[in-house]
Amino acid sequence: MAVLALFAAVTAAAQATITTKKYKISDFTAKTLKVVLPGSDWMDALLREEVQHSWTLSPYEFCTVAEFDALHASDQFYFLMIVSGRFRKEKAPGIDMLTVLKGGDEDIDRLLEVVSLPFGPDEDMSGRESIFLGPLLRIAQRRVELAMESDLKGYLGIPSTIVLGRESRHKTILFADSDISIGVTEIDRMKYFDENIRMVDEDEADEAMAGREAMTLVSYVVAPEHPENGSYCYKMLFDALSGELVYFRRHKISSRRPAGFLTEDLKRIVAVR
Image (cartoon, rainbow, N blue to C red):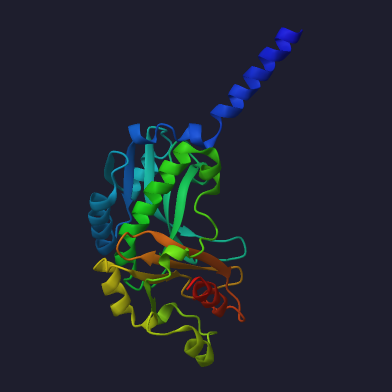
């Protein structure tokens, strides 16, 4: 009986092991990643360029949405795509997510989500997405690597909060003016902005990011164009030189907490300085 009990315990442990996310994506580097082109000339060209420049973790091929529909039931492929994200209380999608899925189910909603990152508003994209797609792809790739190394990191995905580290305290921070919440008052701006923490127009911020300007952090906010009850805003700071994500927070949008970097974000960032 003791031997049978031990065998049952070992079998149960083995079954538990093979159902973990780490196990399920252990074949990631051996399988082809299908990059799904949404069908927009601008976005298709952007995805092609940035994936070719940034993706090194696995072999990849580009495919159409129709090909994705035909292939997603096969577990021989992973898929990288831009999908519309909708939170529970939202009636319509508010933002687009850059998502990696594992094929293997007829029901798209049951496909394993390997990693997902905020990309841009679901409608009326600003064009800033073209600047930040490359860094987001490299971050997604790194999150896949971490998920392959550790179940804990795999299930946590990207941390819900990344606090600016002290290694960033001597770097210039450029906030695009459109990324600052309308709730930040003029008094707040006078208090938190100076020659090293600056609010600039989008073009200046994006030029610094695209030019990989040294010792510079650049803001990027993803929020719905028309927020609904339950909509979220994602606030990010990227190191322009390395593309590393050094600050990440989200908040639920409301009349008291509009989209964009809030005063509380500025307090946290300045506290490190």
